[in-house]
Length: 470
Image (cartoon, rainbow, N blue to C red; front, side, top):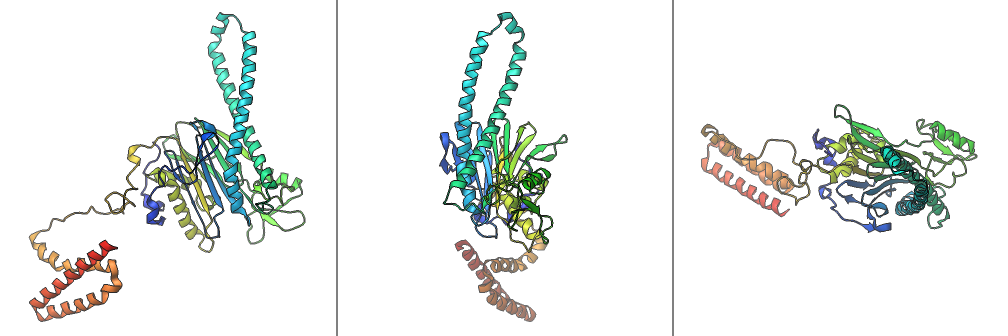
């Protein structure tokens, strides 16, 4: 199964999503990339949920993209999130979002052509040196296993070289692009390519990729696929200092280490690798990605790519718990962002909420039981936002002895509905009726009591009409 409902989803932030946001974005594809790839910048598909939300710091500097049928192959998918920083960080993030996938696709295509030419040469050599037929049969099984292992190694080495080349080309393009100020602005990037059951990860900066798998007892287990490339990592510090850059934390942020120029206390970048930020490229900041690989196992459920607006307030375990508890995949990214926003408000009430960008990539088909109808027109039972827990609606069994009490309380039930609809308009009139009813009961005036009850029911009917109109 793809996701399980082990906990009430309301605990994970549904209440923070605006009602109109319950509508999913459907299967809309926003563009076409190289080799016919389908580009998605928002919405969801069978295996992907994405969402980005602006924080309280100004323009949204986060960006994301998903390329389905990447490199023109149906079983290849590319995902990436970007977190811009600096005065033009949003422009840098968007530029990299739009250009990097094409560069990677082209690099892969070139490597595939080169590999196919090498295979043809190897095939010719092997035919010339072919042994006798009986010897070939005896070693066939071993040769097949060796060939599979070799092909897998060639595949990974080809993708690794393509990632490194495309990231370098992207940074060179930014340096030569006069339309975007990248001197003190840049962006992180964490990218994943899924090729069948192969998962290749390239990380630049402090955005993160976390995979959810199942443990021996079927419990959810987070696996962090990337390292937050902060300046205080020993290998990063060593490189930066060799290039004359400085690394230290300022007094009021002792836990945040930053990169500084040799002779000036600027710009104070809180990551060791990034696109752009050319004021620091001579002093240890690099754009070479940190690469990793994972073979997708049957126990693996999904992977989450997100910017630090998520990871600064939620742990890896909290993130996979939120995503796995969402009953509709299309809402997974939105619910995770909503949960992070709430965490920002409670954990750091004096801080401005950071931008958030999330991609949830699921590995398995969703089961029908995991797909409740949340996208149908609002106001229908079982549709729209989930109903809060509580007793089922319906008629109560009322005993004859309780009938009079129920009738006496009828006006009060109606009044509750009126005050919810438009209390400011109706409250003075209701207050007058309540005083009249109390006086009528004190004097035993039955006819006045009946008149008041009729007027109360009339107000309730007006309220229901107003509610329908609204």
